[in-house]
Amino acid sequence: MTGIPIPPTEVRRHPDRARYDRSAIDAVLDEAWICHLGFLDDGHPVVIPTIHVRVGDRLVFHGSPASRMMRWLRAGGPVSVAVTILDGLVLARAVFDHSMNYRSVVLFGKGEVIEDPAEKLEAMRVFTDKILPGRWDEARRPTDKEFRATTMVAVPIDAASAKIRTGPPMDAPEDTALPVWAGQIPLRLAAGEPIPADDLPDGVPLPDSVRRLLG
Image: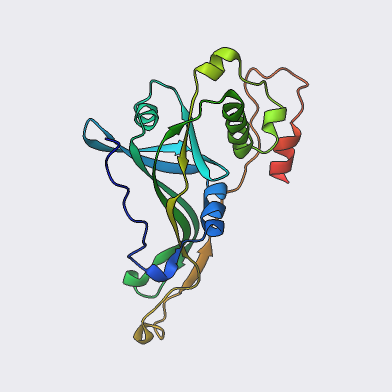
């Protein structure tokens, strides 16, 4: 299992959109909320959507020790991780030339269990504040039982590449005179009105972390 080679990270399709510098890769990893992690389960390819967080030079995942994804990572099995941020629709005059603007990263590597308690707790903190900056200081910290029941695994950011598309549609010259609207429709993820829990006691104020998110 651990002897499976790590694939090359060279972008072959539209290599002009490739970025290999860590600043571009880290920016996408830090902004994206969800990744898709691919691994093998009894010889079958499996892809699981999951939360990730970058801690320095490693991408960290968490979960139950009993999950098949965590078992594979704990054993040092090779994984592939894909992250995508959709920035907009690109509408061309011809159906063939429609596209999307996006920022993406593909990463290959092998899991390393975070055993050091202080390092593991720090990874939990970064995870919590990735979901909502400042939330770690507002909510209850993990109990010893919860701490032991959570596996934290890191994958080094060594074999990774980014692929980014920006800009307008690329219509063929003969199509530019067609009476068809062409252009870009920007898209973004936005927070909605907070919905309190049904059992939230009266008088509990909206925390500062949520107020900052709402602007």
